[in-house]
Length: 278
Length: 303
Image 1 (cartoon, one colour):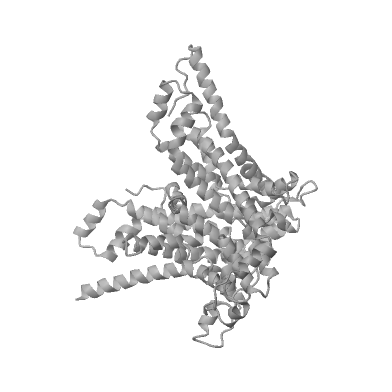
Image 2 (cartoon, each protein chain N blue to C red; image 1 turned 180 degrees about the horizontal axis):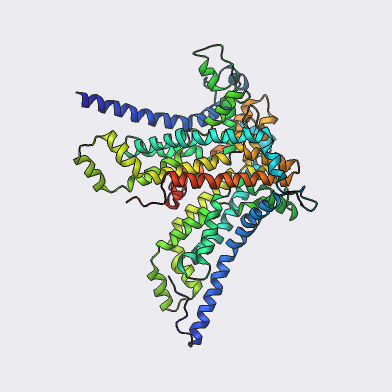
């Protein structure tokens, strides 16, 4: 009898934790989506009420009057291009560290992964001065340059592990067959490193897509702005038009969630990759 | 590992040539990563360390002024406010935040109905912009249109708390923007739980341990590495917490944090002072790592 009660209590507890977790994770997002369909008056009258009708007027307004297309394009460009380039760079670096013995190998890897310990903000002034000095303040190029350095430590770590998990015999037999450095890299190892590369790429893309700090610091005019920075500007622009503010928030939040839905496996792997480090 | 050194066949010139060629390619492959490391990590950190001892506006030559920046920083009340907040937030992160993550991990590990869905959904707050999340919470806590106060008024109709403006509440409002979002901890701990050898558990069952005892005496200690990493990650995130403050209170209501001081000093052109602040952040970060590492005995092998 006591055993059954205990078992039921255990189940109740477990499902309470599950329901609570789901609620805190998606309720705020559902709330802003719902509010973006309500009129200003409806929002003022109570946060729990449902919208009287579903219409996309607020979204249409944002894209027609406020050039959200430009911000979206900026965000895509500024997060994609640096991710693509640094993925190539870090893959090259991680490959030689994983597969070859050469002087300085340990040192380079240690230095690269140690960057994980450096708080983002502590590098602010030198990076700010660097970008201003290169005459790239308020340019997309300047921001993209900074984003190249996103995720150096974790990407190196993920990619090095990936290459190390590819059997060395493959490289050795390719060498015996007379394959040179490039052939061994491109046709033997690279195709087998796909999963690791996607994991690192997804991690860097999401970080860049969501980045606010440097995007806010290094960009000063609206034609170069990215979506996360626009949210805060909207806060002051539409002080009393809540519908538009909520719609703007939805536009910022939803692409990340859709991206995540497609790349869920890789996102999970990249987030847990710190575990291997510990 | 392809051994390049020692070159065994030193008299075979063709082999030697191939190896040197490979060596050159190796360094060419490393070059972009090294360039990024130098320009965005090493040079900035060295600059920060040196100029923290100078008076510098970014245009004129930095003037060496010894420890003045640090002394000035230690004499401001916002610095102590920041340290005090950081201490509070770190303690909350290490206990409640990580604790919640561990709890969810232990629940999901039992694979109840919907565990995969829960894990997937729990990740959502971590894949969207911190800035957007802070804004959502700002509206969540609004006195007029926010959810929280409307809900609280069900119990007490006279509640009128301006969460992000008033002193004792603002700290907690900011805390709530991250408190429950511990999915990284959950993933880390689940990884460790799955790695526990079946034989360890079987032994405990033979000894007559029940589910709770098993979780407490067997699973929890064996997950200490994951929990330690989780504590480090969550405290590091507190040191770097900027958006959640800048976009909500902007430091009002006793919610200052080191990055907020740093950014303000840069905007004022006090680069030396800003970098002194950055040095303190670096030191606090390294200290945290060291203390947690020792506390969780993370350098010792578990099995």
